[in-house]
Length: 256
Image 1 (cartoon, rainbow, N blue to C red):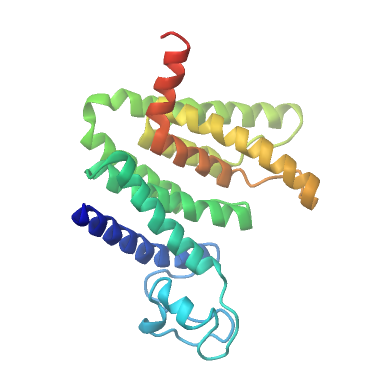
Image 2: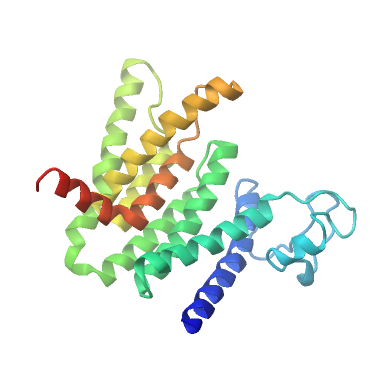
């Protein structure tokens, strides 16, 4: 028991460290900045941030949420992303156990998290992040090649439906039913999850988007146009973690 607790704590720490890198992606990808060579710096004064101020969660607490140099407030996004990523890594391993697929799922969740924040802010999903999900999908197919057809159908089933809706919307009312980034996201995610889970993820994403955005429009006067990526990523995360159980439960209730 103590060994397992220690192991999960290490997984959490690893998740927070990787979460720190996710913050870099969230800020730099929309700005087309280099994510590998440019040093971390204060978004206000531009001063280079030293390594001891980059310790996930700890540095933010020690600094009181302020830059060491100019005392400008540091966005709470940093510790929130780090903690969320660490917690979700633990949840993935708790649900799916210690195996290579769980590692892939952790990386997938991290990408979903970055996509959610970027799309929420910019209404765009960087193509490189969708490609990264596709790479995870290819690796999963290699690990589970016996179910190759399930993953290939997953690549097409929802993305194809969204593409048809896009063409129909443009032809009839000259509107985009879905964004190109959303379609690519569901294509590559389908390659990773397979057709059953990607359908479930899409349904959950649509329900969440409809309910939550309707509430937002009434409460905060949000625009009718919504960033669909965060809701799709929420659906993808739920389907990734519990999709098989949800589907089996539904089929059982239906008598199949």
